[in-house]
Length: 336
Figure 1: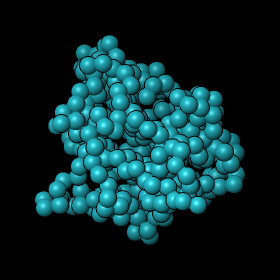
Figure 2: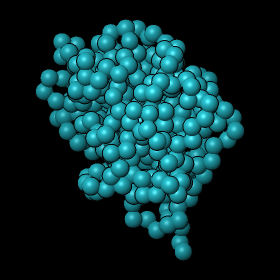
Figure 3: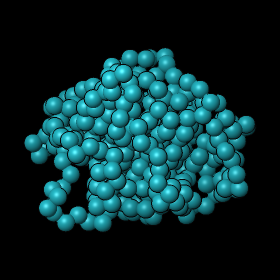
């Protein structure tokens, strides 16, 4: 059978090879280079994406290579890839709003909810704002075949201030594995198991980026809401990268999705990150799941978490740095 032709789309270019990259950027570039073919080409926002909502709250800069989406009293904003993909590597460099951001949600995710309303798949990065003086939190989630009643959330603190500079967030999705990255560090791996069945995402998805008002749940379970005195809240995106098999291409597909094997050094980095920065894990939440979901393998590390799934130690919440709806069945975000 003929192999599919990958259609890599880059909506922004990494720094030119002739420039000297800082260590973090160089490490990420090396990781991306190992996943992408040399033939990858760059396209502008207009060539790869389309605006979803927000009229003037979406602004293009730098010849369409940078996108600003903002939230104010009128509306949020969002955009999506023009096409859907079946496995691949998808990333963006994002700089989050600063100051008082309680209730604000910035989402970078993949979904097919527009096509499969009742059986949709979804892979999420959700960035949850906070009160002044408290850091943003990052949440990841995985849904397959409409499995919103079984939220698979994890939350993390960050070791940097995401409002001061751009940092890269990536999703690597293959037939058997999903890996989430922050910069060059993998932070979560989801492996397909027989017990997950159709709840492992398997249908083509589009890439989305949105900013919206999550006052009802995003900060301390809704205790702190968006204060529009501080609006507009602006999230900045650049280095938007799409590399995957376009929906409808004949299988099998080569490239980033076909080689989702994590090298030992990356696995060690992921384990260190999770030990230091994970603040909530659904596998440890005995309130929602008295019996862990089938894919959960719970060991001695569970002692680091309360029965609510929250980390016992506040040291995991990161340093003190200066989408649309809540999912049904989602966990309560009780921590600042």
